Each structure stands twice: as C-alpha cells, then as structure tokens.
Image (cartoon, rainbow, N blue to C red; front, top):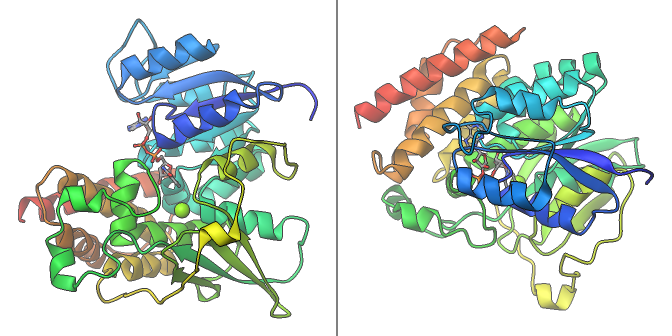
Length: 376
Ligand code: NAD
Ligand code: MG
C-alpha cells in the first residue's frame, strides 16, 4: 500500500472501537487516525485523543466534554472528514445509520460493525454507496469470513452457512432460559463484546440481524442463507459454490482479524497481533442445529427480513427496546423475543423507498415495544 490512509473510528470507546485502535497501533505505517467519536464516556475519549491526536474528536451521545463538539452530528462530521478514507462504524444500534449513509455518499470505505444500519435500511445503504462511490466492507466475523472466501472467486456463489456459538443458554431448558438473569446473559462463552450484542447473542436475535446483513451484502435470497450452531466459534462461515464445493474460513475468536481485513481488503498486511491458528489447540469442532423453539427471535427476525420493506427496521427497533429494558431489569429475558414477536405482529408491512419511511417505522416500533415493556 502507498501513503497512509486516514481512518475515522465511530464508537472508538466501545469494544470494536478499542480493538480497531489496537489493530491501528500495529499498522501506523499504513493508517493514521483522523477522527474519533465516543458515546457518553468523555474520559475514555480524552485518553484516546491524548494517544492518537486526531484532527477531529467528539462525543455523539453525551454532554459536551472537555470543550469537544457533541451530539449526533459529530458522527457525520467524523464520517465525512476530508482526510478520512476509511470509516470504521463501531457504533451500536440505529444511531449509526446516518453516518453510514453520509460516509458512503462521500465516497468513503465503510468498515461496518454497526450491522443494525444494514438491517434497517439495506437498500438505501446500497443506493448511497452507488450514488457516492463509497464501498461497504463487513467487520462482523461471519461476513468477513464469507468475503474472504468469495474474494477473487466471483462466480457461482450459491449458499452461505453462518456459524453461531449458541450463546450462554445453548443447552438450557426453555423454562430456565425464560428466567435468565442479566449477569447470566452477559456471560458469553467465546466472545467479549458490548452488552447489547452479547444479549443479542444469547437470544439469537444477533443471528437474525446477521442473516439480513448477509442478504444485503452478498445478494442471496433467504432460502440460500443458513445458520448452524458451532460452540467453539472456530469456523466463522461456510460458503458453498454452485458445483457443491464448500470453502470455510477459520481462526481463534478475535475481532482484530476481521477489522484488519476490512481496512485492507482485497489486499492483506502482515500482522503479528493475532494468535496464530493451531488446529490441535482448537480441539474437536462440533456442529448442531439451532433450537428454534427456544430461541424464537431468530425466526421472527428472518421473517421480517423476508418481508423486506420496513419490517427489518421494526424488528431491529423492537429488539433494541426489549434488550435495553432487559438490561435495566424491567423485563425477564424470555420477554425479549415476545416483545419482538408482538411488535412485528402489530405492524403493517410496507415498502421503504426512502429514509423517512424507515425513520417512521423505527419510531413507531420503539413506541409499540415500549408499550409492551410497560405492560410487563
Ligand atoms: P459497545 O457497546 O462496546 O460500543 C458501542 C460504541 O458506540 C461506544 O463507543 C459507545 O460510546 C458508542 N455509542 C453508544 N450509543 C451511541 C449513540 N447513541 N450515538 C453514538 N455513539 C454511541 O458495542 P460493541 O460490542 O463494540 O458493538 C458495536 C457494534 O459492532 C454493534 O453494532 C455490534 O453489533 C457490532 N459487532 C460487535 C462485535 C464485538 O465483538 N463487539 C462483533 C461483531 C459486530
Ligand atoms: Mg457476528
């Protein structure tokens, strides 16, 4: 690679944000940090600013800290900064959507961890990329795996099987899962992540978000997208081609590899920061079907994906509200999937030709899901 590329890290104080900075610290010859945004944690952002001295830094969800710009628009400012080539969107939830759209319209590469963006408005995101010449590269480990399997093999992609750890409740009875505590839900067996995605991994709503994400990224119908439970999280995805050949990508669980690949794709850079793969140390690899009757958020989300239009935005918003209510102790774990199902049952499917329809669906679904939380 030639001159250094400018990077904006949105959500730099979170789990993916910090992993991104760990990767960039090893790749200073190739990348420089131009912009950083945090949510509410001013102290964490200031520590990063002191280390990286970015041209721009702001707090997107908190009060003005240390005289820095604050409010949701800092995401747009960081994402469209003229010195930025790559925007790592590591914001959690719907709050990341405007920045993804703005960055793509400004012709940037978006290295996307913020999967909720694609779920809410997949077609609009694709249109923004087309209009502005931007490109979208996934950070999610399963989607990075697929991209790595298909890169340079542009013909005959036929079916994807995304793996899923099964979460902390993989073997629990339905009754026990219903009553799971916040502490139990946050104890993920193989990945250390932010609290929202950790709960999504326990309900399997995360896999529904990922199937919708895969549909938009790789252009396959939902009939060609599958999930298999793989408790060791070593195989990240299987890609089947039209002749029946299957290619998989493997590695010990670490988000630093997919983050680096999203920065360098289709090239690669030498990097010593990630534990080298060792098949013997990885141990036996096992695969099992999803228990769809226990983890109902998966089927609800896939149905919303199949319906298309505003329905995935409704699914995403209901899930965000239900997960936040669970984390605040307002509803039991089992209510999360019920709130998602009921909110989806109540909505009227409709096309989502432009952003206002998505915004309105998001607003309506949040209000409806809050009603269900209050009645719990
Ligand atoms: P996190 O909670 O650790 O970090 C979220 C970041 O977003 C923080 O910097 C926070 O300050 C910021 N933020 C929160 N609310 C905001 C708002 N309203 N506006 C602007 N910024 C806000 O979450 P995470 O685990 O890093 O996940 C980030 C995204 O990456 C999620 O979409 C998640 O699904 C996805 N993802 C995470 C992992 C992982 O290993 N952590 C893996 C795959 C995908
Ligand atoms: Mg994933």
